[in-house]
Length: 470
View 1 (cartoon, rainbow, N blue to C red):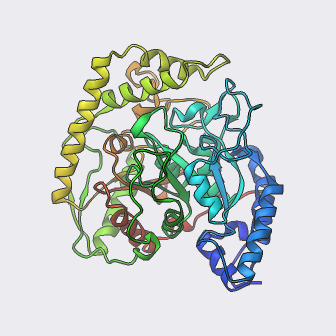
View 2 (cartoon, one colour; view 1 turned 135 degrees about the vertical axis):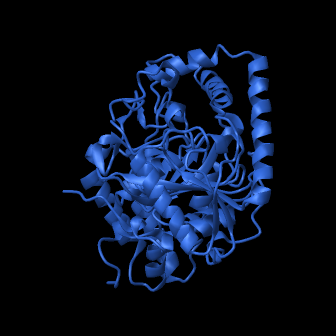
């Protein structure tokens, strides 16, 4: 059928589309392969809260006809895709991991990203799991239970887009659409060993507005940087329902991935000046930085110079959680209850102080990037941890570290600043768990971030690794 190795479920979106174009593979066959993988592999992982094989195969059949006619709707026509359970998808209950949301209502609206993908002919195979209202960095909820890491099902997949990342790395669709309000694409990207990209805020439009305000971005999880760029080509640009959406990009992201890194000024910060990092993670990230140097980048070890902005982030985030759950009546995630209680303690002056600190951080990072084109850090200071706890055991005794931001110090600062940031696989711990490298750029430098990630990816083989299933 094709020279590509393995089942179509294991192919990237780029490989699938190339095979469709050559008429060596049908979108129907690719979709069936993905649906079969979901049936065989998702039980112990729990990446999906809803699948729709009938709709998926009908969409694949329509895509097959378009490819035969030489008239695909987009570069993702016929590509099996999953949608995070926070994003409205026509015909699917949008329950957001909560028992307080009634499934028996009309579900007739697509969020902007879903509408773009549907218009582009993507095949929706199902809805992926999220913690309740997407509030935390792991994926478990009262409604759907725990989503586990495909590399080791005793560990978390990360969150809040844990279902999407677990699905992508397991061959349950090469593209997963997630959201990222404090690391929710990059955390599971690192824990599961896939590419997770948070674009500049507003690059991908969103509706309804997030209760977490302008911290919350929409972005893809994929197996490769190329697939991320293909996805962005389809899902970016303004939508009238999103007052903060940016203009349509003036480039095709997939056409901008071949610039050498020679002379690029990269700041390498192993700990941002305040984070504690597992030694294995630190070593793998240092090795990745050496590869960037070998590719011609000018790398200097330095910190951006800001203090941990966790207070400002938690003030904004937990206040948003309290607002989002104000009418919830059913059983809630116990830790979400604690977070909303904390959110209700903040005053208007506290919120304005957090906003002021956020703006100051943005100004500081803008000045930093006048000297450095990019900043690289670990994505996470640790690898995936025990799926039965919310905070790693070695941190749980510290009362100041009871919530998820305590173990995600590299991600939420760049939601405060709205900068583009990507996590790419950079190795495995001795226990066989993935580790991610984070690449951060100044606002609107999404192409620069993607290009550097692609250059690094091409110089390594980590991205090819996949968990095995019985």
